[in-house]
Length: 87
Image 1: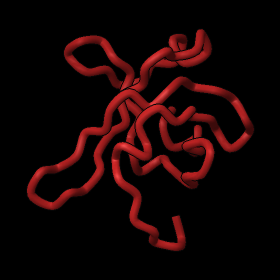
Image 2 (image 1 turned 60 degrees about the horizontal axis):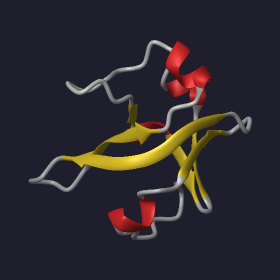
Image 3 (image 1 turned 180 degrees about the vertical axis):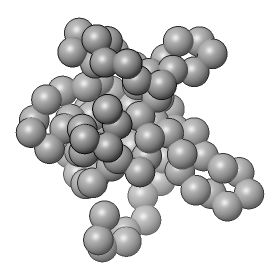
Image 4 (image 1 turned 45 degrees about the vertical axis):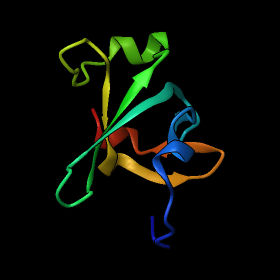
């Protein structure tokens, strides 16, 4: 994200996660961050699509799919991620 614009986590939760090619991954259910620095680490996906389920992505203890926040390339109506950065 070239232009640094502050967003509150509650504005991000519930957004649809898509790749830059338009492939849907799921919905942002939660955000994991480093408490000391405030650095965003992962997005926790809810309602993952069948495509997302097939990928060998990192999961938390409860089995929720984790998307590294470093893969986010744009935030607007959708959370756009770089699919190459997570596979």
